[in-house]
Length: 109
Image 1: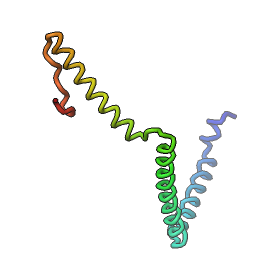
Image 2 (image 1 turned 180 degrees about the vertical axis):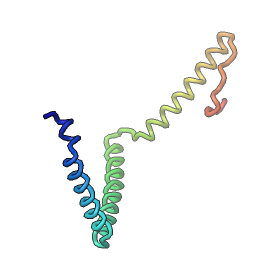
Image 3 (image 1 turned 30 degrees about the vertical axis):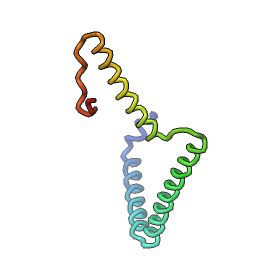
């Protein structure tokens, strides 16, 4: 008997449906419990605090190691792109070509 045949068995389908229904009832009871809801809320709050603490610790570690953060790298990349555009324009002017058009999100200098 193949596995696909087993999954198509009506008795197995009925048993799985009954199990899912029972699991749904249990989860519903758990979520309606005030103690469980309070516990979950506390858990989520603690996870949020831990994430913030981890982020702050990571920033401190990066600074201590003299490494840039992702935001600093992105800012530096944007500045390099702007400088590259300026150099391209200057090079085009020196070659006697019209400067390239500036994309709308970049300031024209």
